[in-house]
Image (cartoon, rainbow, N blue to C red; front, side, top):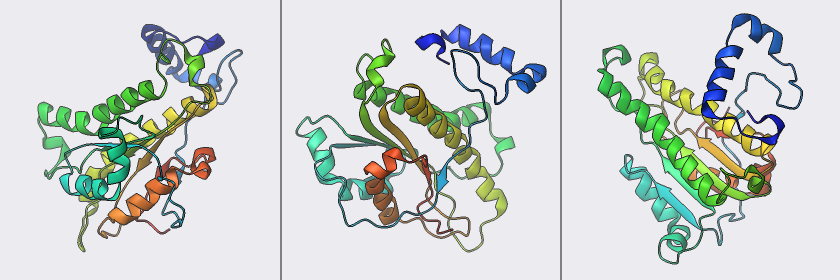
Amino acid sequence: MIPDQQFLSQEQVATTVLTLSDDDQAKILNGKIIPGDRVFYPVKSHIRASVPKSEKNNLDGKGALIQGGRDAGRYQRLLDMLGQNVHQVVEQGKHPDLCIYLTGNVPDFSKLTELSRSEWDELVNQFINQPAVFTQRYINEFVPGGSDDPRKFKDAKGRIIIIGPALPAGKKISGHERAKVEVFRGALRPFATTINQELSDVLKSNIRVFLILPGTVDGKEPSNENIVNTINYLMSDEAASSSEVIFCPDETR
């Protein structure tokens, strides 16, 4: 919330959110414009399935950084495909144009309700906290000093892509198994949508945070080629001007 072009403190935001959470206040304010400030309304995710393969290499000359060792296979595959881009950052010291974070997949367990508190906290850390910290870190790198002076965000450029947990693959995947994964995929969706709203509508920057969710509801194996094709698309000017921020590259619907 940025009234009169000034950031609120955390305490002020907390007080405002608690006030707006009141049922009567919510009915009054939902969809209404607050003078000098933002429009209050529920944020809807802008989701897209697979993107058409482009002959143009939008990654050419771009520096890339990949982080997330929990999914070693996908990490190595992306590193192989984006090796030259990563080399420019790691070996040549180029400022990254693209930062990719892999959350890894949801580990195998029976029920969420049977997890210990420490096990639950570990999952929250893996799929929510760590992607958020990564995003914050590289937004700060794209806009040095932006947290102190939001005006610096205007027209700044950069791409951050979070690759979330894949849906389980196989011929006989139960709804229960998919639901466990969707808990954490669902947590990442509003994060990506809301942060892009802030970056675009409020701060007028060209920085974008995209979310890629591999896998399909019918249990097909996720394709690393589809992920790389989507990454290539997300580096395009078309993606920067689109409201679509969440991509399911293996879905065709």
